[in-house]
Amino acid sequence: MFDRIIDLLSRVEIKMVLLIFFARIIEVSLGTLRVIFISKGYRKQGVVLAFIEVTIWVFVASKVMAEISTQPFYAIIYSLGFASGVYVGSKIEERLAFGKVIIQAITTLDNGPSIATALREHGHGVTTMSGQGKDSEKAILMIFANRRGKEGIVDVISDIDSNAIVVTNELNYLKGGYISKWKRFFK
Image (cartoon, rainbow, N blue to C red; front, top):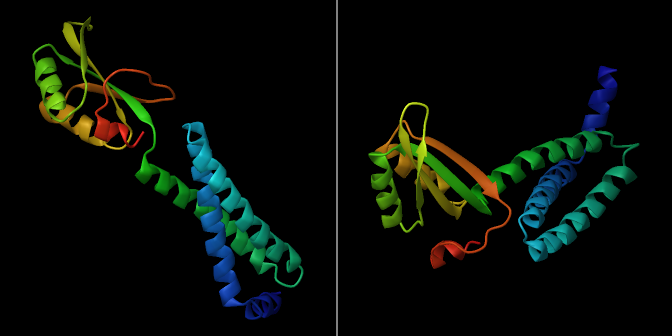
């Protein structure tokens, strides 16, 4: 059996293995981004990615299927490329950070105005409200922003009040309000 495995591996073309593996990573990464683009409203970009994704899939899958009886190792490489593509696609999406978020912060009445002022100085629109916590009154801040850069907003809040409760939620729809023109450029 060990001899059979060595025989199969010795007949594998390294260039083809690398082509299958990396083409699969690209294809699955594009698929991950396509789904995210469409769900965020970027339909045209999603359609372009779908075309490229399927074109790659047709050529790579047909090559693997055509040679599966003589090169079963290609199927393993194809599967490893898929798994790697899911990871790479999720990392790419994380870096691109498409979409909008609402950031809600609950802080003390003393820190609320300072946080709101600091965020406004950074170009963010902030809505403030008063609320009642378990033991005291609280300041509630709501900030609509792009996903890209949300960490900076959270950092500003945490720098002023490390005990503030901060919640971020992704939005599917946002109309009106204030998002600076530069920040709006990234949708």
